[in-house]
Length: 262
Ligand code: DGL
Image (cartoon, rainbow, N blue to C red):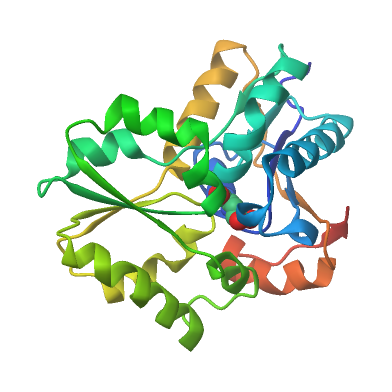
């Protein structure tokens, strides 16, 4: 495998762009391939079997494009599908995401941590194991957010509907004394500005995009797979109407780019 081969990244939609941005920032020499499975979003309300099938298909597509590593830029897909992908491709560096329970448990002063994530992530065995391992000394309140991913996919980052839903979810957490809020879905970093408006400054927001980029860097370095050469551009695919993603890319990715149909 050549060190200048691309890194393949996928999510159920545009949420994983929040992770892709961190990867671009830390590893600008890497060629990046991004697949948004927006034709099947949201994963959060789908069965683990369905998500595993999507993971196999998307991984296969990215490997056919020559990917030297995979990033599941999706907490829900990681919970359902990463174990199977690691079995299928034992030699391949594969990085996943999980809600940042460990750092949140270390950071909270009130002892109450909130988790915003999809229903699928919160119901998963992986998440239960994470709580058992790292959250024995704190109270964790989980809050699924059905409908939020769809708003973010549509580029509605601070519309009336997004705002009303979020307010309804965070107010009970605040009433319970939550001072640390985990963003356990890769779509949610895009609504950080709105969350900052709705939450007191004393509440910390924790997400894992930057940690995932660092983990990827370590894995590639260990295998001597870090790219050299000039900075690279990213290539994008969507399983929904490509023009829809193309319209929200400048806002979410920071620059326009062409999106191809998957
Ligand atoms: N962005 C995804 C995650 O991190 C999933 C959103 C969805 O499709 O429900 O969990």
